[in-house]
Image (cartoon, rainbow, N blue to C red; front, side, top):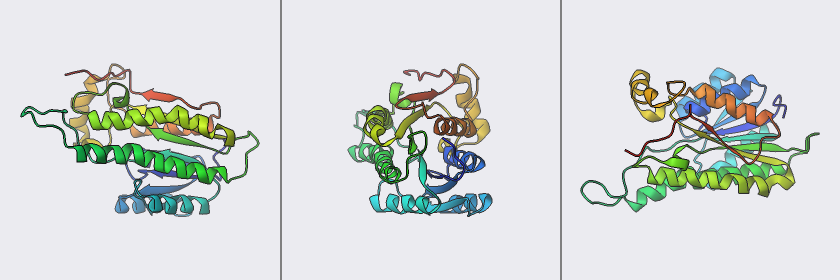
Length: 257
């Protein structure tokens, strides 16, 4: 798919993965809505890229009306052809039963699943509805939706039950959604990152690399958000990629300790 002149939406667009993806989409000629709750970062990114090419829209992915507004804003920038769902959320996480024998709070589990899985479906469904109303391209396609899973959704480490369940749900959603949307020419793909150097780790780059970099087989470092963004845009441009989950993790597999 040619990206010049199309509209795109990136949820979590002011974050690490999101910002890199927004920048790469704009470089490819797309007009992008930065959908995020981080107002200062989102507005600064839009100003840096030029508001005729990038627009910040405050967006809560768990709220239908909030996502509707972001999708509508994307439609004002051109026909919506690309949605990249890469928002983050609070870093919770603990074992099902802690060392004191206390169970993991159900409310925390529900919140994590709501943000990462239900929020993903909310954006996917609304983006698909908007894309389905656009004209079909010469290729027979209307657009592509790229979700973000995690290798934790395939082999989560201890203390990741809520996050692993949510990301496993995103993985399970992928192929079914691709088959659902095939008749209207909308592709669905998912990216499953390993350890990437983003603000989610809440530590300096040096600390994060020292702690997590050596766990990656090759290359022996954390991933860069630009590497995620490159893959996302490659997926958008390649019409024959559909219904698949692509790991991007340097061959990392989480251990069980």
